[in-house]
Image (cartoon, rainbow, N blue to C red; front, side):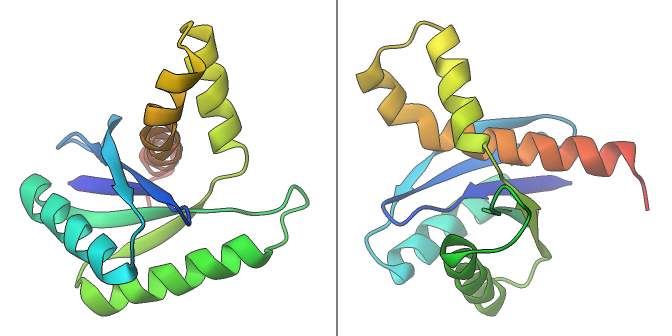
Length: 140
């Protein structure tokens, strides 16, 4: 089963997809957040292209586990996804995913300008991989 991972942002949205076995996720790009209609159209293209059967969206929790304003925005976005796509949609705690993505890219000795171009899809990959690892190690 292919799963699409989303790192939601107000300017850009990072996207990643799992392999067919649902074991490994990799970044496939980002979507400029022009407006909701544009985002949903672009996501629909990726869902069709990769034959996605589930979506996981990073949910930005505060360090104490509470939900703030960013989490409210993500929750509204998730509701829009549920209204548009007839596939299961989960959220996943994304605390520090962007920080981890930045650390990985710095350790790869990537310049600041190059990091800016790929950080969203790397963050989406980290969110997706965390989710995949959890579901594969904790079968229902």
